[in-house]
Length: 433
Image (cartoon, rainbow, N blue to C red):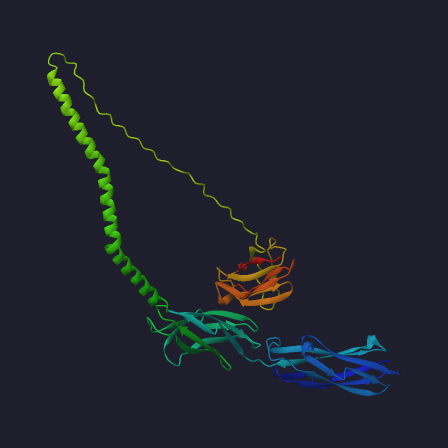
């Protein structure tokens, strides 16, 4: 038994998104009918097909299989030379299986995708957006961010006007849109604009945006101010026409009510004093004159009642509880050809189901590399450490984490200063029943 195979085109070149083929010649040199299975091994196997994949060959019979390579136009097909092998496996003589080696050169291409969130912002002094730029090409590439304002009514600020993006990595930039002129009153004004991401080599990507400029004074401010002014005027008129005279009259009556009994008591005391003086002058020798001292008595009381003020607050315990946990990295430095990640997690992460509504990424020491947020074994988000020092994001629709599902912080450290990467990640949300 025996099998021979030869690859007619061992060296190939292909552009991502297109395809190229190679022919494999097979010969059954054995003495029995053999079934031969042909497949591709190596990195190129993910984007290759063989037709036919199985051949039945009689003794001395030859056959042909065609291998077609069709790499996708994405970062999953990296540029450069990719070695591969075409394996011809014999069913009758497994030990006689053959692997023919070849290489295919994948051409480089540059392509950027961009997304502006939100596409429309509102504000009196400025609008805020997040621009997400993804390198959809298969090589590292630089790009510049430009803005187009057809009405020349806006000024723009972007956190990173020039960036270098790795293949498949998302870069999130903060964008501020500032109107050049402001207005006090009137309807909102729409200012359309465009954001252009221009790579160093390749076609530019353009996304549309809009700022809805609002007046400095909100629509309800003037009616409310007029109503307040009218109330002040009405209150002033009531004070001088009704309340002030009434208060003055009541005060006068109260004073008169207090002074009238006092005046009567003074008159009575003076009268008794005159009588006592007359009686004293008639008792010449005896110094024992008597006078009646008016007795004054006053009684009064004030009764008070003490009230008890109290209340109970009946609360129903909430069905959810807030949760915050933080993951700190201490990742070792990886070489240029080392694509592995160090995984970190928080042992205090709740075991209950969670809804994550906020994340905060911190890179205070300016580490360099790639970081990923993984939910279980699935990569949720990927970021380039070179593009931020502090980044936070808020989700309108929270991201749900199942019970006992780990959230990992994957770090691929590319520091050149000899120090480990220490980027951190903080999650905020609520546990769910």
